Image (tube, rainbow, N blue to C red; front, side, top):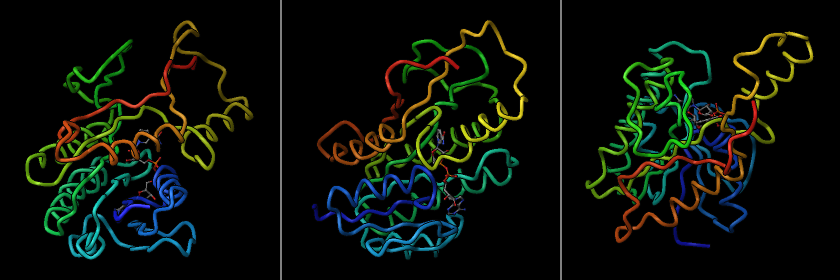
Amino acid sequence: MSKKSFLVVGGCGFLGRFIVESLLNKGETNVHVFDIRKSFEDDRVTFHIGDIRKQEDLEKACKGITTVFHTASPTHGMGYDIYYSVNVVGTQKLVDACIASGVKQLVYTSSSSVVFNGSDIAGGDETMPYVKKHFDPYNKTKELGEKEVIKAHGSGLLVCALRPAGIFGPREVQGWPQFLNAAKEGKNKFMFGSGDNLCDWTYIDNVVHAHILAAEHMTPESNVSGNIYFITNDEPIPF
Ligand code: NAD
């Protein structure tokens, strides 16, 4: 157990809740969740129900916190305005609230899709530039959100961004259950390319581990703050 206090923004979502559980399993006793909805009960967790787009909600939740994990984002298939308001404006407000409340570290969950324009990527690394034309509004706003976070490097708040590709594991509802249902209903009777396509899916535990490592190693003495890291299992899997 450490003297740290943790706030998981988006902590009622798929990834956020696993981060919460990992912190609790490590013996942390000061674990908070900030989310627009409440999806589970746990007496060991302090819940702050609020909207990341509201400064006053964030400032209340950030009080006394040392480490913030920011995993909140609207679900798939929404329009640009909602992605922009949550992923960019909301992230900007969270950074401001962290600085105002004296939070020490902010770990942002970005996405590898910020460098994806539909063309194949093999062996890509963090030196890849953002794409000029994004595939969809989600990807564009994840780039802008990431920039809001990294911009705060040097302000006293330690910041980094993690970029998983697809995440899979128990309780996941937006990806694999839908692929499997489509298959069960006989809806996937066509194939893109030769069938040898690879796609990077990372197991939830590995993504959680990356977040915990980022927080553990992002100290004023380390060179973690200000950086962005791709997160992957190891090898891409056939898709
Ligand atoms: P999720 O939808 O399960 O969780 C997101 C949470 O954010 C939800 O609980 C939701 O209620 C909350 N939220 C949304 N809008 C909010 C608002 N205005 N204020 C407060 N809370 C709000 O998503 P997830 O799959 O757990 O993804 C977590 C993060 O990881 C996201 O930032 C996403 O962009 C990123 N990511 C996910 C994947 C994936 O495959 N799931 C891949 C790459 C990156």
